[in-house]
Length: 185
Image 1: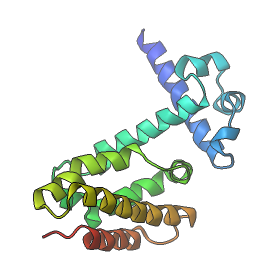
Image 2: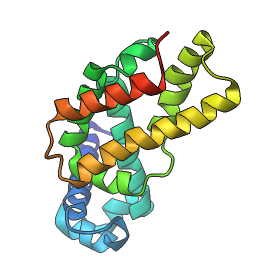
Image 3: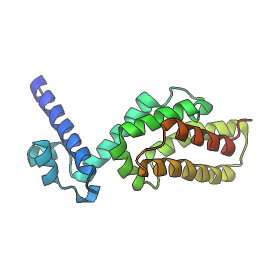
Image 4: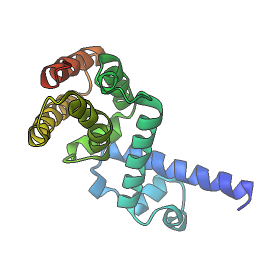
């Protein structure tokens, strides 16, 4: 493809994603149609279907974009699990969530398991606990589920209340909870 087509294609995708985010401010994802998206984005249905198979595919693409941005630009580039659960890291994550509030309101309201939680568990938390031998394998699974429910519960409540409390207060609360659940030594 030539540069003009690549630019046009990228602009179309950007416009479709922006329209989807705008519609999410007032509609549940299941209520958003390709027709409504195309009208708001200023593209035709053929253009939409050139990029996405349906609205769910678009939604999954946005989730993947969020995860990539979080992993690439927000989470620390370290294997130190303690740094990952630090107040500074939690603060960066909360600021990221605030910037992407509409999407997170939708995705956290539907959340049961998610790619980010699994990634954090595998990459940071499990190695830390295995290295420190704090829990048996079975105990770790239960402790992780307990902690995950707490952290996600705090974030969901913060989002559902419109992120009215300062990011710093929520980061401090999460850090305190994590220190209690996963002692450092």
